[in-house]
Image (tube, rainbow, N blue to C red; front, side, top):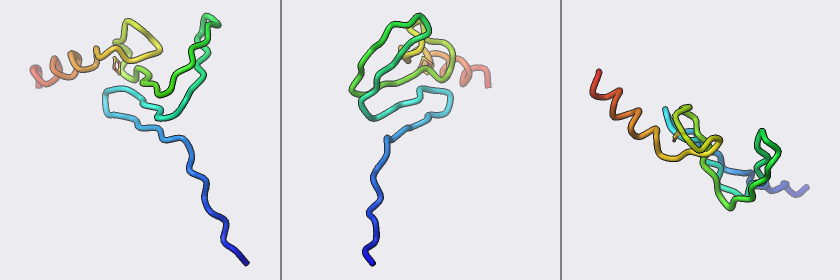
Length: 70
Ligand code: FES
């Protein structure tokens, strides 16, 4: 009997205190009903983005501010 090959799925990378990166084409339906089609997307996982649901890089400032207080 032949073994079935595993089909690779979508790669999702969750960074600590940072974005959730989906490395695959995505159709994103936002809360307001608008739809974006992206080849690869980074969703905000820190809550600081001014462009939610997407990461705008604000997590970097958040992380450096936390490092200064620790
Ligand atoms: S994860 Fe990048 S701005 Fe939130």
